[in-house]
Amino acid sequence: MSDAELLARDETFFNEHYAAFPDWAGFDPEMGIVQALVTSGNTSAISDRQLRLRLSRWAGLLAEKSRKTLQAVDFQIIVLVPAVAAVTNDLKWTPEERRQVQAYYATLAQLQSLVRDNQEMLLEEAEAILAHLQQPQ
Image (cartoon, rainbow, N blue to C red):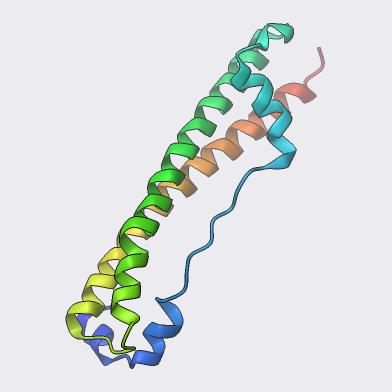
């Protein structure tokens, strides 16, 4: 929002949209077995070298996703939630509070975009693994 739009909104808007706790997705049970195999480092049971390499790349992207998700969740819990709690305690939003919370949400959105970008790379790698598995041997 522009500064004018931000300051023109009433408190109800902020209490409904900014005071909520963003929710995060968790563990993917469908990929859990593959994740356990690859992260154990025991990929020697897989004789197909290309499949081992692809699974290793996938595991690396998964580890990166965990780090990026943790950064975003930590920011949310350590910075954003306490700030929103402090601002909403009186249900009044000063111009400074509105700008501060908007900046925090913009930072959280940036962190979430890094998580999303990584998830897209994970999906691409998963599709490449599937395509590899579908090739005649």
